[in-house]
Length: 220
Image (cartoon, rainbow, N blue to C red):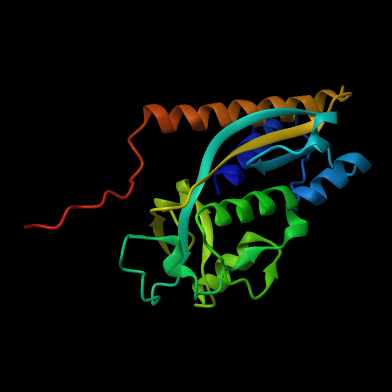
């Protein structure tokens, strides 16, 4: 959601400033973005990465903002939904609705390593393409999903956000484009995305604090 908002603001800014320029956003997984950048079918990619793969070294990369995966999204009727915070191991028997590995193999592998580090074995019955599909299935009570910290305050419709007390996977959202890019419109879009991301980070720092879970000690 945060990335969509930043990119949407940047597209509006560029289309307004350089009318009649039209920019078409296309949602695709990180691996497909990399292929499309190589083929020049897209000009700019947005990659959420815990550890940048060596394959991206041939492109120019700029970090937009940092976040961490430390939230579980569950159906409001899930037995743990009213808890506020849970151990990730309490979700072992609930299906994890996880993105398919071919969507973002680097992030997928980092998540699997992070699971192993906390001795967690997720129940993955199927893989899915696209977060909107996964969120819809969570809202139907089909399983749970990992989410970033920003979604604690504003989870997708029909789901409940729970803090994971023993799991965290930091990541960086990076803008990626070709080193030899010289077209003014593409460079203007790159600049606009960076500027909108910087403004978003500044609002998060200077604005009202975002709600965050604080576990209250039980009364004696």
